[in-house]
Image 1 (tube, helix red, strand yellow):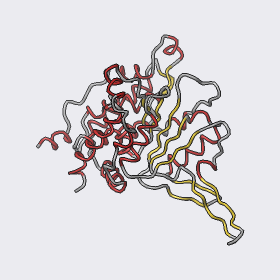
Image 2 (cartoon, rainbow, N blue to C red):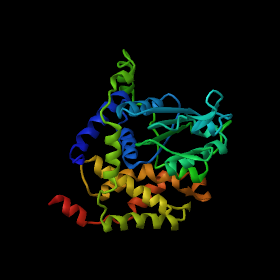
Image 3 (cartoon, one colour):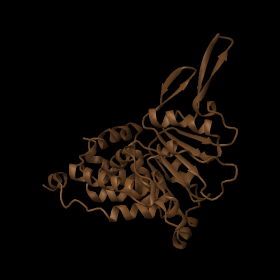
Image 4 (tube, rainbow, N blue to C red):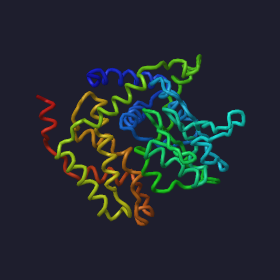
Length: 322
């Protein structure tokens, strides 16, 4: 079966990406987990740290189609979904697909578009389809959307609504490389980085992996562990908004992808903890008192995870060890 070879293929894919996006192995693996989960990623970082390169490299690595949407204040929903054009010669309308109808999408500077245009992504992200002139069209499989936004300069931008933030499985920041990593990066510029990337997976294989990820076993003890953390977030004095049930479901899916990526068909508490920092903070709203004291959502997530007892054992772990 495919899962027997998935570990080798996924590690090879991560190794290839690591040669292009230098020194960001953790962030690369998280992005691949989002891909396996069928989720989407918000890359929140300053310009020039490799966000666009990462998205292009993933598209090339799965041999899939790539679409780029440069969000601006005058971008219209039809610029994303596509339009129907009347052909006088035939007397019929011809659909011209927008960039959203691709396997891997880069939604660049998503917060620079007006809310109406941002909302055009919601149907695609949630329903995996777009509707143009009353006709619904399915998006290709696999479908992965990675949006970028600059967290520092907000002039001329529109804040992403909570409903749209919640559609992103993960929020990731690449950050600057270390001095040694940047020196290594400079030594790799004899050819364009994407020239070193060749397809590692087929798009059909990624779609099959996504289906298998949903079959990864999550023991009841692990589910209770996650729900205990979610429940604690809803009662935490430092949070005005805790983890929703949809957030818990997304968290479990990411944990299943983490286990699958590591070659297991069962989830351990370590998988749950490994993805918490990318899946949960953007779903939380610190209270006014917490913000005034400088506490961030990331810090509060760590506090919640550390403050919840980890299940000592589970039938899933026991079954995997036998």
